[in-house]
Length: 144
Image (cartoon, rainbow, N blue to C red):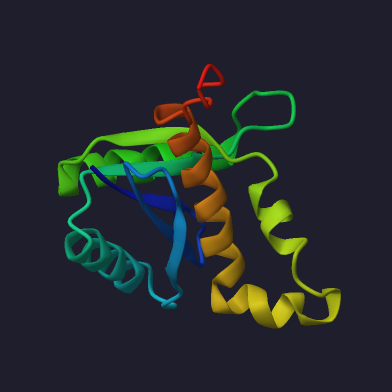
């Protein structure tokens, strides 16, 4: 199993990779200005990594309801399923971008944000959350 995590945005697509080992790692974000070039870059990454599953961040409001952005992500998920033929799992992404950005010095956030690094860090958090649920770590056997 090979997973691609995606932090969807209208300007950038943050990406991450993980497998059954249960560890998510960031990949270069798709930051092309034209949406179709970002899509092509995503498709190329999915094929290059021979992904079997896609994990997409799902933007819920703080109260757990869905809003306008969730509808955009629903449409993006439908396109992923239709054009790539892979399963797409939606994972609550509440505060992942904030958490990813919090590790960057305030003076560099704007510059770093444009590079897509924050987006790929957010995708890594999204994917790691999914992997932790799918492949829970076995607690050590204390009887030894």
